Image (cartoon, rainbow, N blue to C red; front, side, top):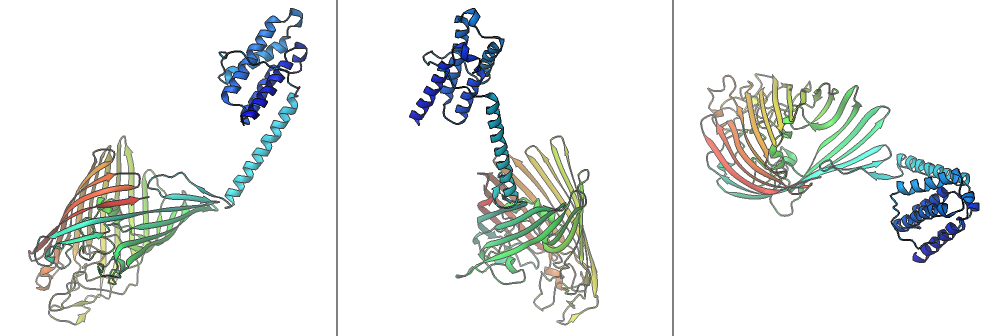
Length: 559
């Protein structure tokens, strides 16, 4: 490479010397020589230092020859202009005249400017054609490109008109739960009556997750397909809640896979968006998405035999929105306002509290549905200077039919009340200002129940129970990496009309509540360290109570 550079430099020097006589200078303009140096530098034949030295010498020698030549032989105005062009060219490329002399320039063979321009134009056209062909090939799916990575937004691959996004999370916690005692509360979420401390290595409120999203645009429609797989790390056990049933800590077990998210969306900015498939419900959806325990543990549920997830604030501040088959429509966002409404797969009324010692049910159940569940939501988002605000409200309606329940003191199913219209609504707000963030949420329902949708929502006498709950949460970023969070939440379940005279609901849950404090340390763009303390308690309608304390520490990775 060094010998090649020497040969090229010598050639340039020879060309320069040969062009010095003014009889030849008419045919080899000074700017031609500058162009030659540009070409050699672009091809990598000259280093920046060699290029600057040669161009600087050329300018100096041209000026010196003009001063030394006889007046009659001096260059014409055209030649002088060429010399000025060379000097301007040198200045434009940051070349100074401070190099030491020592390189002799020889004459260069004549190169027609028009030929050089034609060659350059030909090369430019070929280059543009090649670039367009490469772009066409990419758009036809022959190439896979990778979009710029944004932390928390997953990995996006582009193949032709399709974007393929992979995102997800993995978490794991060591959790120590200490029961505070008390009798078991039917429908309570506290583990206080268990009588034994328990240790668990488990998932938090989130299981692990791998979400695949395919996006494209066809004939003016934005189309997405989403598949979300959410496996747990602990052994699964068959039960009423499938993968979310308490686990089985026995050898040779395998974890559960919760394929809870399967849907397609299509729409555009003018007509809005339609969703068909299984996804998070509208009612209560924002409550869980804004819950800080989504990234930690909260109330443990079963800690001695962990399932896919803990409870977080489910049942202690809101009713779980759940992942439900649905057909929903969402409007375009106008002035910060957006609305959604949909028809959902109706869910059964469920006896979460179970039965008492006499096999008498605490609650009614149902299995018949002639009409769908209806859910809707309205959201408003706005920014006021450094303050960001979001307010939402949602509702739920479902007609429960063919209710089955057991009369007090008997074991015979009856159906005095065959149907009940379940109604529920909620409202919430989130405010952010600099490093502070606050969340407040409230819900109320008739026949809604507590903890899960329609859990103990209808009494054993066939009447609807009212329920309500709320949580408040405050978070503060102490530093760019460290965030502290504190929250309090409660869920209440009230007795139905005529139920107070019955003996059976005495141990039925009246209130679940918890106080939670946590610290989140953002170690990297992917990895967060979490430490948390939670105190959970459950009270019954006869005044009994149980409580427990939980300490958790672990990590959550999001990509």
